Length: 242
Image 1 (cartoon, rainbow, N blue to C red):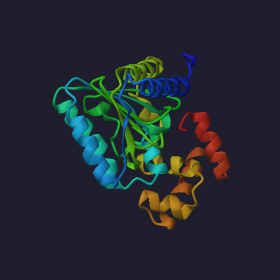
Image 2: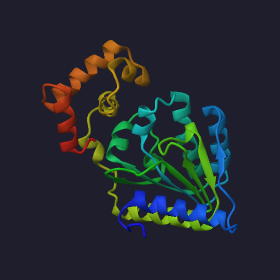
Image 3: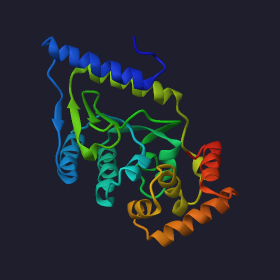
């Protein structure tokens, strides 16, 4: 029995039960989609455009940075959510403090545009549920743009909705958190720093020169009042930035 408190275990249990239902012939298998990031987002956009009541999601913008998702692809997710809001659908996102930190410039967490959000320590995976009927689950657990499954088994979707509701109930309101965060031009540095990537790789992911990235790391150390990157990570965790 999956722990009621462990979202990872509950998601894993739901998926295992779904596979069992497929083997028993009482549920259709999930549809797996792979391809270019652009073609995958064309499919996601079409599916989300069908939302008339609600989109529930786990979203963490820091995952996009860690997986080097190109800027044009990063922009498409928020656009689909804002379009849903424009149609009168409800958008409820669960994110993390790291996600809020990394999101100050992108705006993928759309609570300022009429959506709703809650902040937890860590989101278990990337997830999008459309009208409580269709779930989109990434193959790598982090980003949809690298391939995903379309799950329509009502039993599995209901279990994923329940996990979302649990974390939603446990989460905090995002309003006011920005006052405790670093300025936007330094916000993306921390997730990149925590990923362990070299300066060259991290700079490339952020669209910066290596020199600019190094300068911003130095600025971040000064802001945190520490001498090195290890101390910066520890202090960022203490402040709840990571």
